[in-house]
Length: 586
Ligand code: NOJ
Image 1: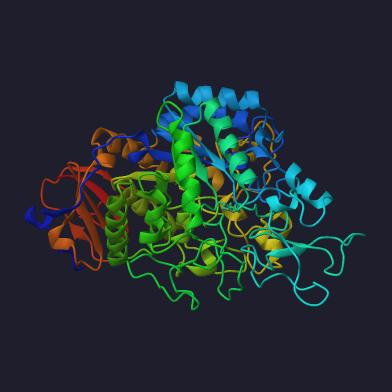
Image 2 (image 1 turned 120 degrees about the vertical axis):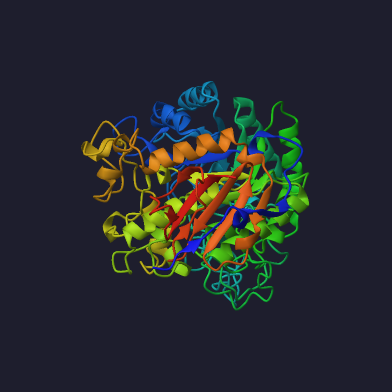
């Protein structure tokens, strides 16, 4: 078999492509672990995770070695979109516990040196929010209606939606109210919802909405949270007049094609389709973040704002993290990049350059609660498009072994990059998605709104296995889990991996330990010159370490006496085989 043999000279660093920032706020190099509360750990046995469950597992997180935890929403909510439909921004849903449970969880995290980031959902509320209920009861043109985006319909009887926008979850983005006696000739009004009809969009032209959310920020800041992840951060302000738009709105797009309606195709190596319709990435959002930045600065300590903004190219995303706005933005260009050496190098280069240009840290992410987990994604023949959102039993199924192998290699590549990295609960166990969930158990609104054409995101939200073979694999004190776990979860449970050499958990733990010890997060980066054009190998210097990923079939023989610090898979006769990443002492 052909092998590529490297000498020590071959591993020489080129010129630095990234020079670390001088300031050292905690989030610049933090590894941030996403807890999806309903699926993390169940404290009361109802089959749905909760805040006491999170508190009980804080030691798992501290021992893993992460710096911070971001919790998806736990607010009072009818759970139409798993909590991203908030009915009360200042209270905990009884499903998840109480405000006292929150305080206990926060204190427990802080005792262990873990920061806590909470999720803020300002683009829309739940239709059960008191404001929306008031708006429904009030007349057209009232102050109560002006907190949302109510409009008269088109057509003589007003029975056509105000514009042609589609919901991101499928179907029209407008719902019409039920008729009532004072409707007048235009008939009942319509309201805008970029997501589910139970998630009406708020009107960010209204100063009352601004004041309310600044107050919500202060409520949680006073409790002591360390930051906010801002949902749909690119969507709050809509273009004046809400003009028609024929483009396709999506939360996550694949890498395969660009939207035909998007004339400004990404030119900077970022992937996927730009989302620059009149509902996204409008100039007005930046003023909101400038004012929130000021609110955070009123508080002692270092608190951060993290943008969830599906905006491309990366140069547009960088505008959200200018010095007086937010502090980080999720790097979805990295998440959607295929397993391809040249494309990965490009996205890393462009990410570092564009974020360096505004003085913000780059972030890296491979999985979250909206996309197919990377252990499943990388096992697909083609990654992209709908397959990113969910896999159904009738879809081509991932190759589990290949997926895990590549996922582990991708993870070591990610954790070797300077900046801040986000990980999604369960990826430290190498969990795949449930890729064959029956329709009866699915809960994602996108499944219902597309009549099942989109499987939806439930597959990546399956309750975690803590104790292999126990009822519910130890998710909680009963055997209940709100979604069924796939059979492989027993073998992948946390207790089967703790202390087991070579397990995915131990690989993550060691990587995080080394990352901290070597100060990788705050280091500069230089490509290994001799491999900078390689079709199969990605290799760079960071701190005192060389990170080398082999994505090709040809094994890469390391120079004799190389000090291998960590590997995502076994080396074969001193060579790095296909789909393997190694960390070497430089
Ligand atoms: C993005 C969140 O991550 C997703 O889960 C949610 O459905 C939408 N925003 C709407 O809030």
